[in-house]
Picture 1 (cartoon, rainbow, N blue to C red):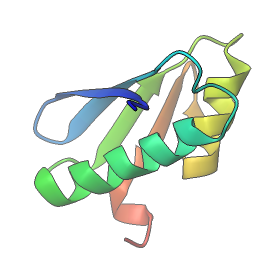
Picture 2: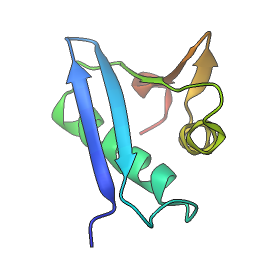
Picture 3: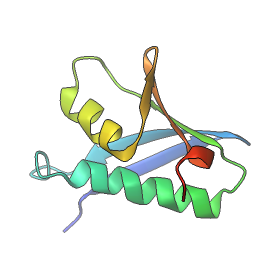
Picture 4: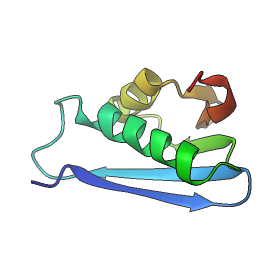
Length: 88
């Protein structure tokens, strides 16, 4: 079945990512896998995008862990992934 949904709002060099996991899919490590797959997709399909940005509420620890596992770094109240610095 469905794992979840990823949405990107993009401009030329930045993309804001939103992730929603389907009911029953939480706590299984699927969030990080979904985020990684989405980051790989945007790297290939939108080559002008250099940074992916996530806005995560500070109390949403599972999301913070998932994005951190993929390589997102905290930048104030945002989490960012530098697509040029990931080695992929």
